[in-house]
Length: 239
View (spheres, rainbow, N blue to C red):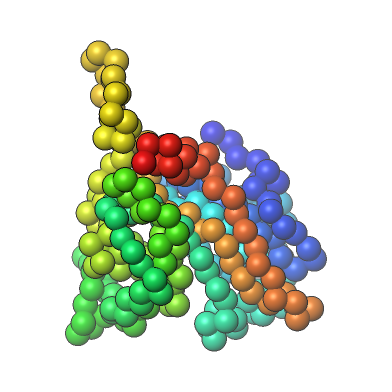
């Protein structure tokens, strides 16, 4: 599927482009992958000097900041370094949880091939995430996740530690979400295999707050993409 970069833009000025990244497209070029389809490539085709201010996992949708010039890039990089950027994610997790400003402070290190991480109290790098419950459903919870640090898979592994793995995240113990489990009277067509309501890790980067070059602190929001929206609506409807 060919993506139109302009369709992804939620904000643009002389310094930054903020996009709502679709799931299943890598932030940077991947080895052996279709070379035309990374966010960085699409951004550079749109604006030659584009640089990503940060990254989102391939499977994660949501708000992503792109700098249009070196000064803008440095300005944002410094804010990330000093932890002055607020990142808010929404995740649908397995089970019912009441999180109110719950902080998980557990160090993380990558495992073997670098495709996943684990908690490592000896050699891990500092990682902290704060969690708040937004909505409770019958068997799931919508959780707001505020990563203080920016480690790979940090939110996913920290939620696993809270026994609240993200829905459809098999790497960290999250189960698929089947409509037949939510709906009491659900009939699957004969000889068809039921698919999870969401085909990826149920994690969406909801908003990013940082200061623009003119000194204005601004919140940028990314609406839910269709798959995440459908999931949340079905959970609401059936709880």
